[in-house]
Image: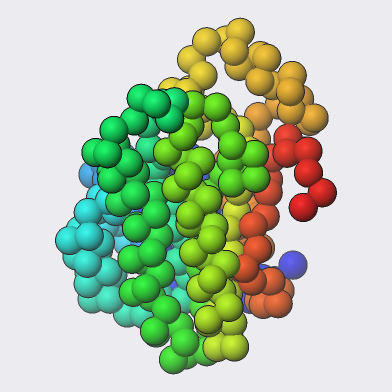
Length: 253
């Protein structure tokens, strides 16, 4: 199927590994020019080299999206290198785990900047150009926790839910201008983040047993969902959260 996005330009944050890299790779394979952003300079350069190995146009720009100054620098550099953006994939790393009673104000403030405000600032920056041109796609990478909170991931549960509410509100504002705003909500995915949260093999085995498809997701499966939301075929889909969780969330809504 031709997704009709070849020749578009996308910014993907958190693109050096895991789900972010998989989404950047999927976009590149569709002929999209990709600006890949991440904090780790060396990992980002390696990822960009892999993405560009077959002649794709990839621009690597290091940035910490929890810092508003670095976001401005990232966007300025993006405009200078590639011009306007057609697609934004807002994918920030998850905040640290911890039960509600253990988290102080500083931890909450850091989570707000990393997970919520990065999505808000990036969207706020790209929406004017998208509205002006009458086409745009914004996809936030959230988590199944927006439907079913995960124990001890207090900050992630709260912040990703806030991103979801922000996206739904923004979607209504820009829908008439050809701009869609959606979220892809991954389930448990075989990435470095999963290894950090569940280092114990027994814990991972119990978790797999609780997933109806009896395995963790592959990053490319999450990327496929995000790619659809970026496509021309998804022009009538906005304000939605697409769960890709192997049936984990037992809900009809």
